[in-house]
Image: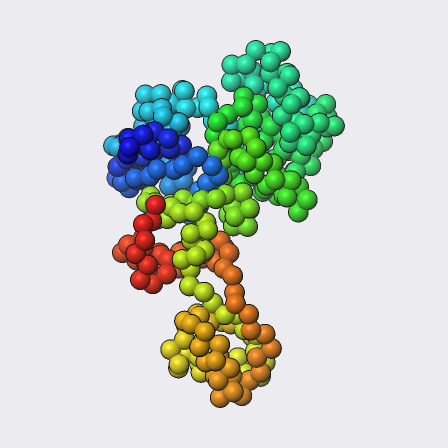
Length: 330
């Protein structure tokens, strides 16, 4: 049973380590990533790029094993790479080519014959919203159109996994929404998997169902986003008038945890009596409560919370979420 479950996974890693001389880039990574849309998060230098390169067979692990779509990363890197589309953050397009020629050329580089590559290029350019601009030179494209063209290049060979690095970089709101909808459609309707790296948490939350967070070469979080939101302590957001500092002090003196942002504060909700404690604190501090609502945390809040707790050198990944949580981190 367990072996079958592992084979069904998109990516598996067992005791994966990567050393660059004395520097430990990946530290004993054990991971089972299911098919779907996964956000790969972590600060610069955390080990994300090294992890991807190891999975693609571009660099050898120092020790440990890994499989992608059932293929061994040590011996079958060429097979893995043939089933992956990559949309890089950097500018990878030839400005002198038309969009149709750029995408067709990408297909030919991947081994497609010219006729099949040309037909497929028309299809994917329509899919990414560039049907009417496919004969224009890329040097005339807006940033949003260039990002869409990069996505088309990544999709030309109908890959099973799409890796996107900062896919909405530089996009206006309209282009951003279209890009995110296209990525989500690729997962939900196309049946493909997406690994997405982005510093914009709203984008990750829109496209992805799960996140993998890497910090100092370790996997510190691997959970569904829904599960993470449920594990975060609930807060009550209030807006006060007439003495925010006094209100903060009064709440703290009652043992309540407070996060202050000017006149707005978020108070950890212990139970329904927390509302009464807030109003009682306001009366004692002589301030007015202008607003009081239960705050729904988003992925941005969770990411900042995790990074804050990592800065405190927590000993266990369970400590990254709510206090006392003992659930499985997988």
